[in-house]
Length: 381
Image (cartoon, rainbow, N blue to C red):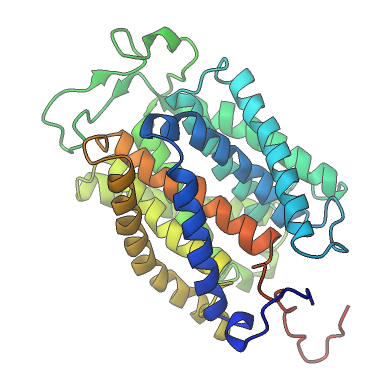
């Protein structure tokens, strides 16, 4: 155990451990976000922070924080080493996006292509288990997964987006005025029209859909893949990945039809609703280490967490909205920049800080997370 670790009971188990981590990480996220103005935050700042997420996913879920080998390092040296590697790989990912997708300019369609690649990398890892690269060495698996997410997210899936118009200029649906040019002739970004996708689906709807398919994905993680895990024939690749993706896509589509078409919620506002729910689910997953669902049998524990994630997301939304209004200013928080600011603080800054602190730094300076209990009949490794 690290000599500097705190040894009181509340730090060794949830929810005390998570509450401590939540205070530390929210403080860090707000401090980091407060360093820039709104234009910078919605531009290069969150573009850089979001570029770290795909590498974090690979380092945590594919490499298990063990590549390069850091298991023999004590905290805080291990956390520092993994953080530096994250920054290095994330910077390379960021430069690749700017060079090959954005022509060295951080603009809306490039940022949204990056978000799409983030969604893609999680589906490749969680759904497909890095298939078809799963038989390669861990370093190769991770790197090939990053390349695949880059190609699929930035080019293939992003080709479906249409950035010609801002469909809801006032942020209201139904819109009181017609769509206005965005990348189309006469729009503020018409000079980059040849670079932006002109696919069949309005970009506001498509990016909302991409985030909403992550809601059932994280719920399935909380439930231990139930009910898919009840069918052994599904639990092999690529069948699992295909079924997993189809289930998430169908549920996400139903959610959007209800939210946007039935309830008349403007797509970017519905996007932030989905981000808020994901925020709550990820808080339980990372900061609280699946508690309280981890104390129950599956799938009950997963469904309990899925329910608790809703009020956590609501509280998180209003807390971050208050921070954004205070720091960026109420007058600056206008549509659509306000939607991207709230989502950026939630998943572009706070989530990466959660992963770094709870995963790579292992709640330091608290005691290291104890290994999971060994089931009856199993042997310790």
